[in-house]
Each structure stands twice: as structure tokens, then as C-alpha cells.
Image 1 (cartoon, rainbow, N blue to C red):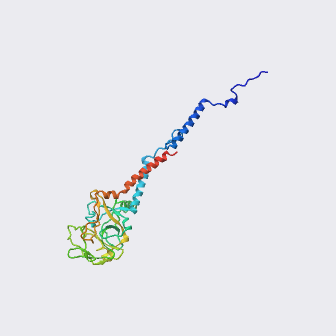
Image 2 (cartoon, rainbow, N blue to C red):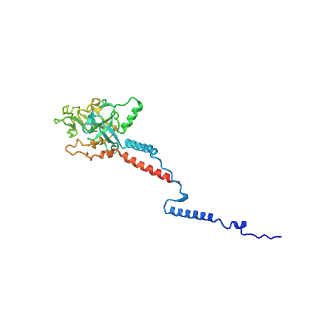
Image 3 (cartoon, rainbow, N blue to C red):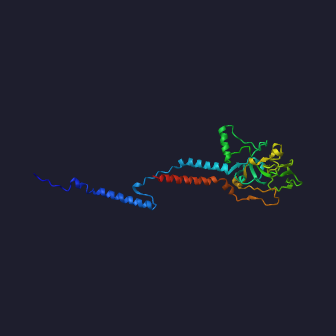
Amino acid sequence: MVDVAHSGNSRDNENEGDDPTDQRHRDGDAEEAAAEEEATEAGAEPTGKRRKKAKKPRSFWKELPILIGVALLLALLIQTFIARVFVIPSESMEQTLHGCPGCYGDRVLVDKLVYDFADPEPGEVVVFKRPGTWNQSEFQSNRSSNAFVSWLQDVGAAFGLASPDEDDVVKRIIAVGGQRVECCDEKNHVLVDGKPLDEPYIYWTPTAEPRQASFAPITVPDGMLFVLGDNRNNSSDSRYQGGGGKNGLVPVDNVIGKVRWIVLPPSRWQGVGDHNPQAAGTAAALGYGIPLGGGFLAAWPVLWLGRRARTALRNAASRAGDEP
């Protein structure tokens, strides 16, 4: 019988050692894992096999509709709750506000928040909804008979890009609840509580006599306003609407807001004064002399918000692309 010797390559010895190449791979993986762990603890971005390829950011054309939607939403919120741009198509407030035929109608910024914290005061220029007792319109709104086109015109009017509704009116407050208004003294001044008004803003049409049109005295009830146009003899206001008297008054609840700025055209950038005519001899209230351009900045905060939204969206897209 021949004895067979056991060699060192038996199955028991095969598992005692690995192939050198496999051992190097495992050592390399361990070193790489240790390096990534150290990088993660140090706050650095992981590298190597464990980092997945970043997703490609959305293209500008895919992002554009989102940006437009955000900008429109912000503009709508601002116009609804904070401030709104109105077109002035009537010449009744010349020359404080331009609206004359053949000229570029002023776009004005109307503060919608101010009367949530204070009551309307004499001298303030306000936009309000025409009361049901007012039976005269100072301009005709050129609205299409097509329902869709008319809707687009309504949207444009909300952003100051088209003529407003005929029921949106702008005038200056002359007297508030509890005050008695009458016309006129020997110097052609309207009287409130027997005292003549100081009205440097009055504009006399060159073709008309520079004299106040008389009206019957009236005591303004609480919650109502007596309003007049600065173009004094070319304005359908509290003197004439509904036949005058109480029918010509405006409920405080109808007031949309206070006119703060002329924002367009650029040549007319300025604040709109609210000189109190009952405070004779005093300086014009804050609002005159506001630096040019301030109105533009106040009227278009949505531009700044739109840029912020765009930056935020891009950052969010970049972060989403880096996530595994």
C-alpha cells in the first residue's frame, strides 16, 4: 500500500488566506469608508463611490412659469390687501392728478391699509366706490362686449394697466361727520363750520370763470364724507350727485384707500399732498416734496419680492439636486 502525503493545498488550507488582489480591494474600501466618515464629521461633502451624481437643475424655461405664477400671486395679494395702482381717467382732479383728454392718465398708488387704523381726514385724496345715490359718471369705461376680453380688461385694471371700473371715483375730502359745509364767503371760499378753507390745490379751467359754484348748506352725518374735485368747476361731486344734499355724500365704508403716490408716467413721480384745508395758514402736510422715484419704489414691491422668490426657487432646486 502506498501512503499518500497531505499537501499544503488541501481544502482546509484554502480558506486560511485570500487572494492578494481581493485583500487590497477590501483594504481600499475600508480606507475610503473611513475617509468619508471623517469628511462627514468635518462637515464636508462625501466623495467617492457613496456620493451619487447630482441631478441636473431645472432649465430656465421650466422655471419661468413658476416664477411668473409666484410674481402674479404676490402682486394679487399686495393689490388686494396692501396697496393698489389705479388709473385716473377723469380731469376732475386736475392738476393734482392728470386725467385730461389727450394726456397720459396718471397711475396712482392707493394705500388700502391706512383706514384700518385711522379715520379719513379733511384734505386727503381718496378713491372710493361710487355710492348708489350718485347718478353721474365722469368717464366712460371702454369695455369690450366679449366676456373673455372684458375679463382681461378687469384684470388689467386691477394692476393699473387698463381703465378702471366707472364706479371707482377719486376726490378730495372737504368735511367729515358732524361738520357743516356751505358756499361761499365774499372771497369765494367754501366754509366749514363757518370758517373759510385754505385750498391752494384748486385748479380753475382757463375757459371758465374762477368762481365756486354755490350749493345749499349741509351738515355731514357721522360716517359720511363731503368730497370735491380740485378742478373745482369741472367735477361731479358732493355738490351735484343725486341732486346734492345728503345724496351727494360718500359713506366712509365706500372708501377704498388713500392716494399716496403718482407712479406713472416717470415725469410725474411724486407724492400726493394731503394739505388740510381747514388748517388755514399751515404748511402742506407731509407728502409734497417727496423725492422723485419714491413713488415708483413704493408701487412695485413685487419686483423685489419676485427676485427673492426666484433666488429661493433656484436654491431649493439646487438643494434637491444634491439630495441622494
